[in-house]
Image 1 (tube, helix red, strand yellow):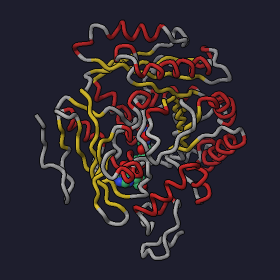
Image 2 (spheres, rainbow, N blue to C red):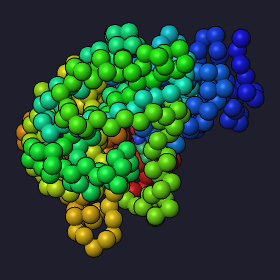
Image 3 (cartoon, helix red, strand yellow):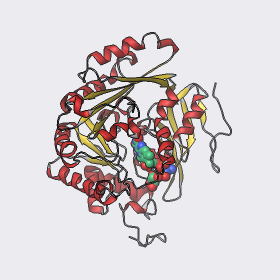
Image 4 (cartoon, rainbow, N blue to C red):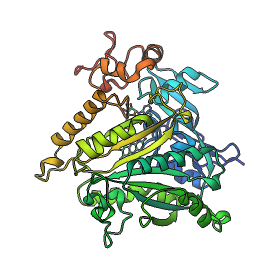
Length: 424
Ligand SMILES: Cc1cc2nc3c(=O)[nH]c(=O)nc-3n(C[C@H](O)[C@H](O)[C@H](O)COP(=O)(O)OP(=O)(O)OC[C@H]3O[C@@H](n4cnc5c(N)ncnc54)[C@H](O)[C@@H]3O)c2cc1C
């Protein structure tokens, strides 16, 4: 039976998500927040397969970038889990597109940074929603042991569900202050982990974060399954932190932290974030140069690091990733604070980002920016590399007057466009 909440999506006003239980998808409008997509699909015991860490983001916004979290090694990014889109192109045409229908537009829009059209509806793949999550963090002082284990865990993606984790992420801890940070609320503040007592190599620790989903039917075997997987890993033996919580609470974990930060006035501050896809072959160089080098012993926010399998990304989409089978997301998610401490200032952090990019360039890291920002078209051409001519051709086809997303400065507005940006 197909379920229905409110009217089916159509032209005109945004409608409620519409779930097909039989075909396991949900139709949502482009501005729908992922948290609301989740709430609607749970009514049918279903949920999307691939997520972002934070759910108060719009479907159109994350599909214009990629949409990644710890499920990406297994299911691919959110853009690999979309069946169909309705798009209003820069020419004003409303088009339905998918792998089969108007496929050029479909692939252009996914990861397309809003350059080709506005996503007004998306049809998203669903799976049966797990009920609970076993959430585990373990620590490493040795970077190569850490990445070796992460890569081992993502290599299990073809295994049956009982023999792999459902989510693989990780983060870098360069100062003890970070342990009580919003993303690290796992560690009890009453029992703080002393980095100095763990023999961290170069003052840096690495935390592997993994989860296993389960429900009533698998509750009896979850302990053994987790144990069998942990046995193959080489983390610091006394450093296993485990919690157990409902699936929704796990997915919505960052919101809890957001509310805390908001109450202290620490959410609406500048975030000079830098997100990079670093190829596997260069991740150790990145560790030496950035985590143990440029960052010093202060980070001003979480630094995520986790690998993904490139074959879960569709090359036909607009997103660009490094040219290796495995690449890492390194997300420096820092907040600038006006505390008088220079190392927390926006200028300092922005300059550090510049140093990191310069280091990557000089050390031949061959990374690609995720959620990219560049001031000139030349740099955008460099970012897209071999994909630039395709990206350009698609732009000329779907938004020839270059009226969409001009602020990114990828294309100069056409002289014929009445909406040409005066700031260009
Ligand atoms: C707190 C926070 C946490 C985040 N966590 C993650 C994460 O874990 N994983 C991850 O992958 N990303 C993450 N992001 C980045 C996020 O994916 C992008 O910022 C995305 O653009 C956010 O969507 P939005 O709804 O805020 O978009 P907006 O800020 O509204 O839009 C951003 C851009 O997306 C495009 N766009 C938006 N809507 C549409 C549409 N309907 N059609 C076409 N183009 C559109 C436009 O180019 C627009 O300029 C995070 C961002 C924040 C602020």
